[in-house]
Image (cartoon, rainbow, N blue to C red; front, side):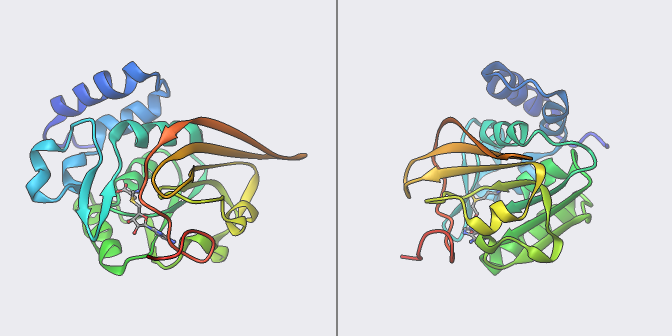
Length: 217
Ligand code: SAM
């Protein structure tokens, strides 16, 4: 991949915010080093693109903190042949990171203007191999199911059953589960005998709005 500008800032981000907090998967670290987060940040926040924080992307939505993107990606444990579904395209940054690691990414975004932003941002990197779908991701995407990995990047009261149903045996789902303000990062791993659920600490995400998520206020 062509080295994008601000590589030094990304290296520092990876060392001081990500590796130092225990992320070890070399493919995840490499993707975080390669993908230029500043391509996904609105101009007024450009200087803050590599800071240890989520940032506004418009329409009341956010791009997640780099460490949380890395942590959720590592928990997904992606393999090159995997097909991954993301719910909550937002800026497109998480989808870009995933596309460095797996065969195919489908990402669903509920707000059409935000989906368009993701499309434009991903186009800047020439990443065309990502399907961006406008719709309610709480229903999943049965047309392309099942998925080896599902990542929900918005806060859900419970993991939507349609998403659990669209996970392969051997698949992993990662999601912030809990209240509208504060959640726990949860993984569900599906194996032959059922589902194993684990918790990975506290997080804060904007709400997942939809049929199997929160109601719009
Ligand atoms: N992954 C994004 C990124 O890399 O920039 C950040 C996601 S942002 C924290 C959460 C996104 O989920 C918002 O863009 C929001 O509009 C979207 N969202 C909320 N409910 C949704 C739903 N039911 N289906 C699809 N997207 C949804």
